[in-house]
Image (cartoon, rainbow, N blue to C red):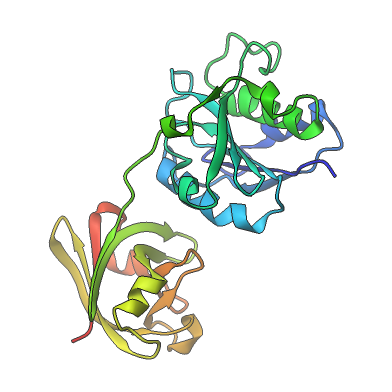
Length: 277
């Protein structure tokens, strides 16, 4: 079976149509899927987190095309990374690959050779590499027109562009971290605090936890919130701490919207502190 192709971009709903069409013109038998076209614009961290969640749940050999590319048309490398699980990621080398360096790991990375692997007729266009380089080269690789060596020149994995990882602190009965992301559809937030670290600090399901959220060290919220397996364990409209599918601690409201109710944002200026009284 030919490798599957999976797209994620910040283009908005329907934004991948030209990319899908490009793949199918290369090989009508390819199977092309849309994972997410609503990543926050220009947010390479969000693109990396999304890939970290996607990659483990698709078959080995899948080709992921991730286009969140604020530097499109500049000197940043257009690349294809071979992951240690056998899958590939086609992306600008702009930080997006950061979470994958740790898990599943990156075996090799190659720069896309535009002289061989660029869609013909687009040579004078520098603003749509998602179509003209990434989707086109992914389709050639998936169809077998080129092998991985045919993508372009290999360069050291150590040269992959990375961003600093947001960490956490932990002591008995207290952990703190960064609000790293939001599930906007449901109004939940995610932290940088791994579930395992939360448990190591002594927190257990069923407890009420004192939650503090700060923005630039200014306290935005202080509230006791129950730590439960999922939303339905608390009353409708009640806040809940839970284990996110991303492997970290999340906060939400059962059938509500936590981030809009309390005016919460995300990023390194937003901290979350969880502690026992």
